[in-house]
Amino acid sequence: MDDLGSRLRHAREERGLSLKGIATRTKISAVALEALERNDLTRLPGGIFGRAFVRAYAVELGLDPDTVVADFQSSLEESERLAAERGANRVEITDDDREFLERQRRAVRILRIVVAIVAAAALLFVTWRVRQAWQPGTPTGAPESTQSP
Image (tube, rainbow, N blue to C red; front, side):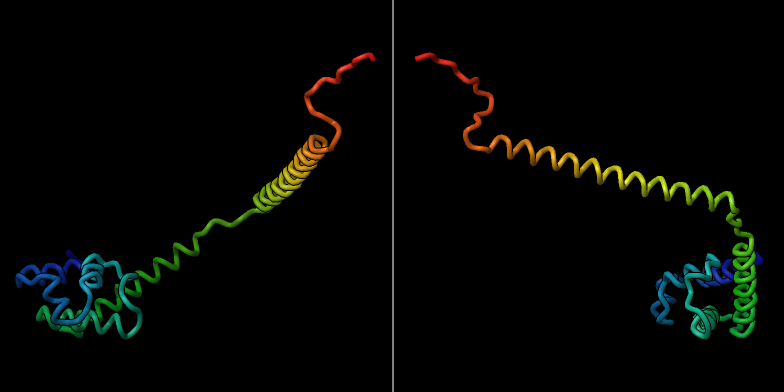
């Protein structure tokens, strides 16, 4: 129980206080207080507002606000450092990957062109058949009768 969130939750539970009650008295959302107890510092506002939330929560719990804010600040810095390390460990895109992606883009472009040509040809064929069917004097499907006078 050495992290800040656990200590705050433990202090709240020892005093028999509910998150909802504290949220009402401090005007801080219960969601933000829950996030603080879970050490999900990304859900808290940044800068002075986050520190003000932590200070108000510590006062409500009867804890030393300066100590709690200092612990919060060090936890926040550690969280940001870890996030920066994760960002630095991103996989680089190699030249082979770029070539593969370019081949895929070309293939998709060619496929679009082929589909457009096939669609245009189909449209022309349908138009030709419809015009042929509507031409006067050319019955469709009726055999010509050959009667002799």
